[in-house]
Length: 261
Image 1: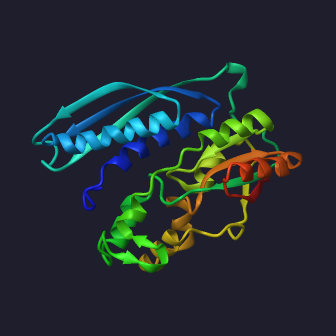
Image 2: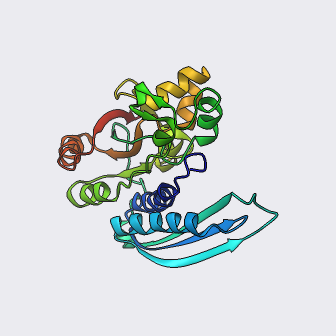
């Protein structure tokens, strides 16, 4: 964001990340509050970030009810800022999606991400910015590196709402830090594990670029990045086709990526 002087997308990233985190539990987002801290307040940058918050809140039918903006010279560089967000949602206790009914043989369906989302940037920056400039056009990405890394974290709220209304999803996992396994295994009942078919979907070009440029092994890639899967739903086998059909109607790419063992 600093290198490209583009700050609107990071506000959207933060809201969508928070929305996904509560939506996977079955919650409806109600309102969002932000916190911004600058070394030296830049009104134009602050305006762009807050506009990003506003755009994403509107898209997710979530109220932006305010927050705090702090100027903290000495703690941050004059051109730096930090931000965080708090989201509040609501779900009927009886309708909480917590994975307690997941059982052996259930199917994992993965839904396409559009890039790094908000995780893995420390490694991605270390690897890619040592070789490429942020504004450099990279043919395999069909964009500049900066534009690729600034793609807005997808909100899966509409998809999650449709699936929980029309199918019997046993659990969702939002794929953030820790990758597919690290995030999904947390919702499994004790004694169960996962079997992932890593060849069941096409990895996004940005992850291939990171892996090749940094000579990173598969194990580390799978722990750090989402690898093109931003959301996982766990369903019984008899629900699989309906989940795939609904996601197709919503123009969400989906893949059967594994099973519970």
